[in-house]
Length: 188
Image (cartoon, rainbow, N blue to C red; front, side, top):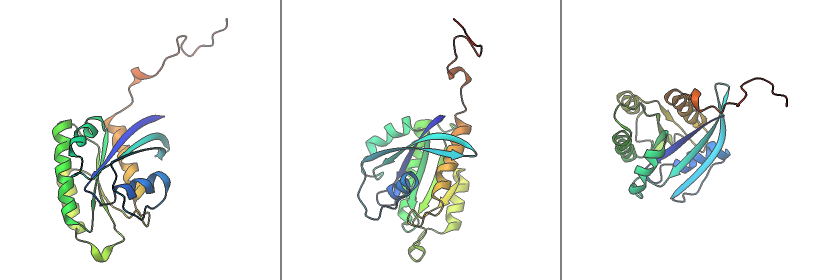
């Protein structure tokens, strides 16, 4: 089974942990408790293939910016989270995206998914879908509008990222462990 790791970035209070915990445990975290760093693992089936996915839920981007560089260097895929009810949080993910490309390289085809949270709070919405479509098109990344509370589109985010990581990091046939005797039966 292939293993991938994903880093969840975004401003504080946008719903990074709620999104992650909904995906990992299928639970909704009602209370806001600022995260420093939480690491989760689970299997995910995408297109009939099982993979291990390690998800690193990070602190709000403005709180521990020094750690961001470490996370970016070790991360293979990134989920950039903002709140649909907070337009300023969308600007924060633009800074994170720039930082990812600065560290990974401009032409590195980094697996990224843009995620707007709190879709269920329609009456508080500040980020219009058309603006989001425009940004995603300019960045060349898929986007999802989600609600961890209602479990809307949460799995789609992680499945999309796994698909991107499979394409970006194909299996290396040289890394497979080979039996010293090949596929033949050995009788001693």
